Length: 270
Image 1 (cartoon, helix red, strand yellow):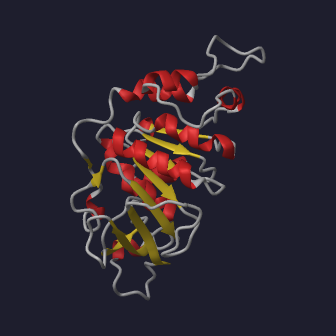
Image 2 (cartoon, helix red, strand yellow; image 1 turned 45 degrees about the vertical axis):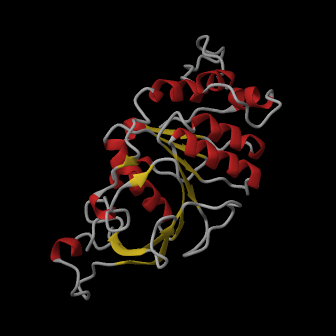
């Protein structure tokens, strides 16, 4: 997928004196809009701005239902689905696949996902895990000083925002973003570079934390627990031990074993 160069977009953000303001969402997005007056002098086609994209999808998101659906394989961890308005952390080996899997079912039912600053995201892998690419928006990593305003422009406009900042955000920034999520019903998913139970780089409290504590590629002929259909895909099937802790869960949290990716790409329970 071609990427949009953020130069003019970031220039408009640098003109803003405040990190956040109290304008209505449509006016806030308008302030971040970069020009779409026509083809540039270089002859390149001008694509819709990120703010315009958020405005176009806003009317189809954030329904009154307070829970977003999840894939069947994840119901052992989230039996009631993904509650709107929360912040989620995902860490461990395979964190990207798990983060995308958490959002996949929602995109199939009309929700939009915006990914901000994950330069390693593979669209083929996202589609394989179940994300509907027609409802996926990918945003280049903004300058650290403009990261919070860029993310804030989408909170309340789309259901799901996946972030993977290459810097440590300020505590005040993540508090404001969490408050906006609660008010607007968006789910903010932070993908951490941490391993196992560690959440690195996020200075605030997360409502839920998913961690992959152990992961191994399985399916060899020497493993009698793996069915013959999976043996044919032994280089593509990874068994992971996932735990989730957070608000409203038992003190010990919940745990489950998944094949992520499964034989067909999407996660399944073995």
